[in-house]
Amino acid sequence: MIIQMKRLVIISFTLLLGLTSMAQGKYGADSLKCVENLSLYRDYYKQKVYEDAYNYWKVVFEICPASSERMYVDGVSLVGKKIKAAKTAEEKAPLVEELMKVYDQRIQNFGKEGYVLGRKGTDMLRYKKSETEAHFAILNKSIEAQGEKSEAGVIVSYMTSSVLMEKEDKLSKDEVVEKFTRLSEIIATNIAKYEGKPTKDYYIKAQSSVENLASPYLSCDIIIELSEKNFEKNKEDQKWMERTADLLDKKGCSEAPIFFKIAEELHRTNPSAVSAEKMGIMSLKKKNYEDAENYFKQAIELNQDESKQFNYLIELASAQTSRGSYSSARSSARKAAEVDPSNGLPYIMIADMIASSSKACTNGDACKHKAIYWLATDYLNKAIAVDASVRDKASAKIASYKKYFPERDECFFINVKDGDSVDVGCWIGESTKARFN
Image 1 (cartoon, rainbow, N blue to C red):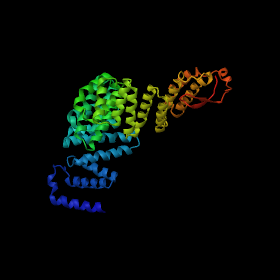
Image 2 (cartoon, rainbow, N blue to C red):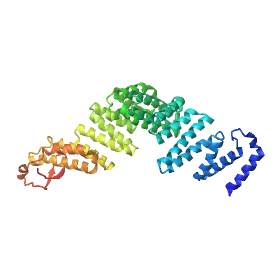
Image 3 (cartoon, helix red, strand yellow):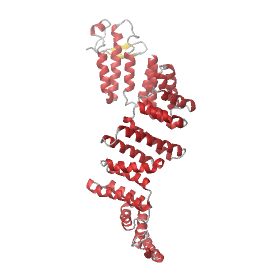
Image 4 (cartoon, one colour):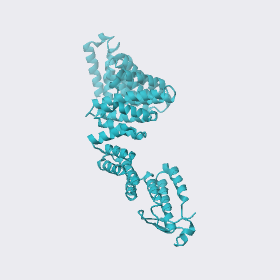
């Protein structure tokens, strides 16, 4: 009822203004019909009655394309909803073409080519992914036009498209790295530009996505070169320093002097869980195991990101193992297993600690001495039980340790039979079940 009354008002208002005299203006040849449908689509759109909104919107789109720039923004949303609702590829195809036309027509009537092409290229990547050269060309043109004004989402789309081009042998690996370098510079500029604003988070997430996409193409030489080149201008940017240190670490480049330089600067200027971890890694590389243990403990104490706690505990256990502090290392590994019960790595680490104690934990009895390998195998079987991804690694270790199991006659003299409980002493202080080959 309200919309019908509004329609009458629109007609009266249009006649009073004499919009019909503006036949070739922005409202087109039939200005009355244009203004009427423009208002109706907006009303339905605000009420979230999208099907009706689309029907009125389409009239405006077709008869008066220069009437409203907002109409194109809403049009992307309305056509996008139609695409999402389409049940078959046949239904979807013409809607995707209509969406592309929305972008083209917006540029034709309102300009902003670089910005709009970024949005178009992103949707083309989503809906026409196989047309690699087409979406790459559009996104490339957008990035060239927008430069540092490029949106975070468009940057990620461009990196994705570049990787797809390389997989089809239409870009070289070096060219992908060039794209990564350029996009990283744009992201860094925007992270600094939007300091203290929500938009900054979009670019931080974009940087992570771009780094993950480019990761297979980044050798240590390239990462180190980029890190050294950008260090001075970014050394006060905590996020850049942390991301770069993470990238160097993940790619196995943590022995490079720039990694040490970044780690030390991070921890000197703004100690955090991340900086403490990087100092711990640096100390491990230098075989300063006591320092490494202390830094990883700091990382755990300072940490406020639960997703990183497992790694910090594993790194602490590794430093303690390197020091020969097996009891402490086992405790750290057990805490890691509590944080992530579905990860088998802590149990593999404990198994290795126990097995490597064979020489140190001699007690004059061959049966109990070799029972260490039974216990190590118990932990490896537990690793497999909780985490199928470690099966091959754990199974290989089990096969290796089985060679050192006690023989039946070695246990005969202390009256140990199959299935009996055997105490393993030394620092281990656990029991296991006897089993003979």
